[in-house]
Length: 321
Image (cartoon, rainbow, N blue to C red; front, side, top):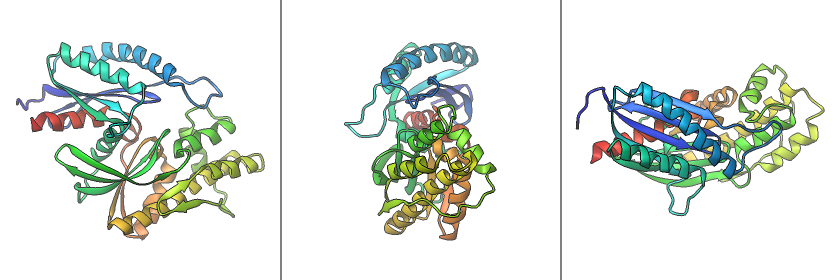
């Protein structure tokens, strides 16, 4: 194995809303991190899988020309792609076949190994890239995205993960909740950025919080959507956004406190696009710290969908061979 800076690993992730390719050196320096958001029509609340697949194919063609010019001076040692949403046998989603097939072709052309991972593992690794946790062998990872709201008990040995769902939303995800309310407020999908900005601007105190349904780490979020839609025209956009993110935070804090106590965990790593919210991260850090729980958030470029986590996993598999 050659450890010079010219050797790199490529990571590819084709999620429901982002096409991502990244490259890291063998000492985990990010060389390339390119992502293209999929286009969603105005007033729409999402994309069909077939539409997303078509856009991924086009986006990978566009990124390929970029990566070819940048990486011409590097030796590609391996390619790793997300091939499914979770590291479970039955886990499947059409969008990930695009990145998987592109990765296989890319590795064949460069005569290097192809490695498989999952979107969930990709997020966890990306969130760990800039965070140093005390115990990497067991910790909680909270995955909050457009399609997923899960609290995971993560155990890791080498490059292999054991991931158990110990808490989650029983219906819609945090990302779906934010986007649905955001679209109703008139924001462009995906709405997270706009909702977060409005919430941070609001100086109005929340007089009466919304009712929440949380039991032993499991949450029901559709009731929050119904409550907000009933009062959405009675308050400013800033206040509705603040109330929404405050309610999400309270649900999560209650769940994490219960699970942390149950499994004797003192550290939580946050991953997924929703964790990029400044409002949510500030509230979670403050409240969890009061309960002696350390929370780790990463930079938005690594907390939102990306290919860096895939590249890190590919590197670990490459080194272990």
